[in-house]
Amino acid sequence: MTQRIYIFSPSSAVRNKPALRRGIARLKALGHEVELDPSAFSTHMRFAGDDATRVAAIERAAASGADIAIITRGGYGLTRLLPQIPYKKVAKAIDRGMKFVGLSDFTAFQNAVLAETGRVTWSGPAVGEDFGVEAEPDEIMQACFEDLASGQGEGTGWQLPAAESFARPMQAKGVLWGGNLAMVAALAGTPWMPQVKGGILFLEDVSEHPYRIERMLTQLLYTGVLQKQKAILLGHFTNWLPVPHDKGFKLKTVFDWLRTQVKAPVLTGLPFGHVPTKVCLPVGAEVTLAAEGRDALVFWGHAHGHGH
Image (tube, rainbow, N blue to C red):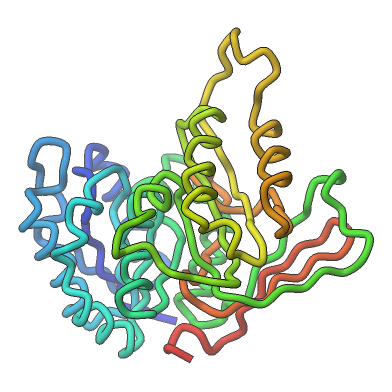
């Protein structure tokens, strides 16, 4: 099913141009019509253009009439733009059926849009890192993206570690939200932090040592965010190195500690993060989380792409 895809750069400058070009070629090969934002390759210091340039890129994406607006890459830069983002135009585009897709730094945009407008955006791939890899793109990532593009995606399932197995079936309903932990923590206490009560919060991160992950989780705990959630889903926390003085302090230490701090179930292994195999997740949609034995499932059905 041919979709119109608009590709834009709201965060860091595109440093790997061949990867982006490969990603564009692959999206075209899947049968999509692709439009590249005129400032997609702009650079200003580490950014994809100065702040005004990147706000204008978001505005053009919203006005493009595309089915999907997807980022070239993450990096850093969206938190600087939060007061300037044209939220009304973004909301209108979403109401007309546009799906904004991205991850990492894009988490700031997604949660701000949720806080400002209540609209759904999609945590999913970026064009460069995911579609532009030198080898073949990950099959599951691509299948999930194609499901999103065709409106077929209804949920995602994964296997929990044996230690987290649910003897009795567990079910929870709530708004799915979150994304990159550093970005969510950075929004705490700002007007762009979604005030989600009884939600299902999902988190992932990259290049953050477990003690830094714990520090960001304490930020969300002490601001009262974690206690308000029905469940916490942890994706992948990748690309960090242990140091000798950790002396046994590792990711599992942090997750075990988190479980002592919140009543809500904490599930790990969600197929999302800075990893090749990533699913698409509707940020701001009502979802059902179900777990039985080692099987976990997040289900949202069809309706959520179009504001219910």
